[in-house]
Length: 461
Image (cartoon, rainbow, N blue to C red; front, side, top):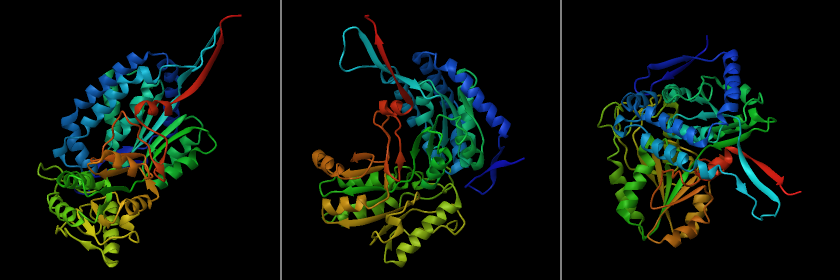
């Protein structure tokens, strides 16, 4: 029997192992989802919301078990207490706006004797292929609004965070959700592609690599299913002379290194105006030295190992290439665990970098950041746009209108000012270029998880 093994980055042990679902079990899950969706769509939005909030309560009730479980699965230190602040905010907000966001939209030009409106219909069966880096937060972005919209959900979680899918299933079971409305299933890549190509899934949401997104599109080709793809990122920051320097330094260090840099919208490259470059770099280096590497099960660990050794080795390669091409490394932390084939990797700050180095153009997804000096907005914008990705960009200034002006020229899905690395559920989460397509959260997220159906009714004959 084929199994999926979860290797813990803490010590390399097999932390969990689960059998891959048989083809018969996969087909049965889909049939259950299709059958359950008919009745689920008839359930009121208010009732669906009660189930979601009960699920949230059940999930939060497992915090003491889940927090060390996350550390064992993907390496995030227990000091951060899981992801449930964001999970609460997103779940509660999407439940709160559902009635209004899903309400029929009347025609803008009323006509006497006619009733005309567009209804937002559920898509049917939604598949969520969730990543390991924020295994609860990213999954809930689609699970909750898809269920609130009247679709049923099949979750296939990343192999690195196998147990998260089971936790969601337990929470929904405690909430009393009807059978078949939500199902967690363990699949290999081949099975996933086969299911997507079967025509039995109506929408898939995938968060992961660009290569993974291309594989999803290829597997779904010809089915005409809808897709939501959040793929790679290389999120930039631009620090202007009028920025509040202490605030910018502290927040950008956290944006670069939190979760060992394994954040979809983490800061991977920073452009600093020449007038404040030296002060910023000095402050950034000093602050970065506080982000020490440790055992994620211990309270004093600020960052833990990366989820897999191969991810850490990629950062080592990027750093080595940058140094060969003239970059300067400023932290050079010594840790006996930091060696090829190990997921343990200290943070690093690089200067004297340029866009001939992969660390400034290719996704790193790890605890390394390059800082470049720029002369003006034009140079900063050109460099920020010199990337195949576009998820978020942050601008650090005291002038809101200036930030908007710069942001208007940046190819990105979200523009931040004086903050970074955060999803506001009231704002749509989307990207451009190789970052993918589709949209999550906000009322627009509901539009992407429903299909429009027009009603043109002549009432007077």
